[in-house]
Length: 167
Length: 419
Image 1 (cartoon, each protein chain N blue to C red):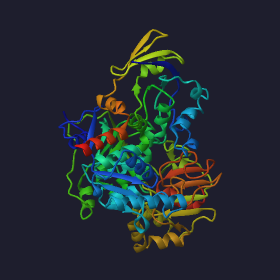
Image 2 (cartoon, rainbow over the protein chains, first blue to last red):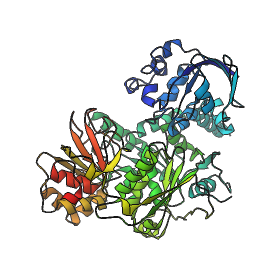
Image 3 (tube, helix red, strand yellow):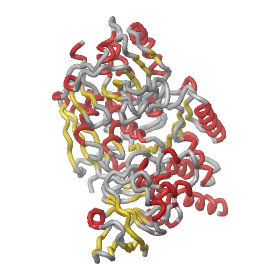
């Protein structure tokens, strides 16, 4: 069970807003964590708690295909992103980088900023403890859940390679 | 269950009889591509995952196209890194130097993408190979790196929108106008997570260059891919070109589509997409007469031989307006050679155009003709976001080659009917 506070955002949060291109010259996820989402909510990076949730509107992660966007969110301690919908390449990159994401239009509309949430990643059930409401997100596909638990795509491939060398 | 072309291709590549929309499948890919923007990231991720060899050296394509001929030290280092990786792994398909050109156009022209194949590319416009009936999808650099090692990638099986193209193309209306009309109708998210599958009587009159332009623009509707059927036009194009045997994959007659979008070409006039959105589309004749500083004819959606022919047809015996810098950049070396042999190059140069080396040119704002603050361009490329082609205060109109050439002659945004 994941628990944390909600940080709400609107529609079309693009990959530049998640982590601005000016920070990409440094290949340093700790630096990205300090500047994640700073153009939209400057207080976010300093105040986000480990395991907190992003709750956003439509087309989260649109714009460039940069993989640093989910990496920056993960490095900042974000437990999961819940959104009305995700941009296609962000959807791919999030699972490949080992970040859990959930599509749930009802939660995207109802959850207030700073509400306390818990989320069962296996069933996709989201509970808003402050409003005493529940929302059912699309459960994560088992293949993608395994990808996240293995630490993302490159770690999964690395492990398979090691196994094949041993074998 | 009756299946779409996309479903059938995915099912065939993951050893299942069926692939259901929404399902995640891990599938064998037929080809992996990277360019000089993505290759450094792909190569880094390849090593990070402990990759020692690529799954099949003949099924990896690396192309230097954005910054070729090497525009600066960083581009030169990247090209060098790609060359070393290619040589170390015996990659069969690497294009640089005199072979360089726009990756997506080269892959189609060289018969490297084939009907029924499943292809991933570390570039959003990899969907261009849908022109040949392949399911071709743009992915991130880690996806491409993992596939280089394993030959596999995961996919969410898409629903499909059936796009039916009907009618006849009026004078000066071409593939780009059909594509822009599709962007106007679907908007940036209209095909979110879905595939576009093209059908209809107009297809018999759309050659493989026209299909490449339309397939490439699929991504700008939010689509994962855009696929044409592998019909007789496609089979004729592949004759003597295909690098491997291939088998057409057609949708089942009863396949279910999320939506049917009909585009009647007869009702179209030459179009433009106004700054700063590819979806802000209007007839060129009603888009104002803004003075133009640069005209660019090139890219995977506007630098093919048919585009050069249209432009040369309008420019023959005329002069580009003195205020306009007109850049013509053929997408591939073969197109450049054909343009020389057909006399198009001479026509364009006599009219006052600059002829550049095959590459992406200024399309992504990286090289060969970027725009200054306040400059206005008419371009046959495919994106006109703020700062895309140079300075954030420059403005770009997207159009087909006829509107671009007419604007070059008039020195302002113009419709070819005016010339």
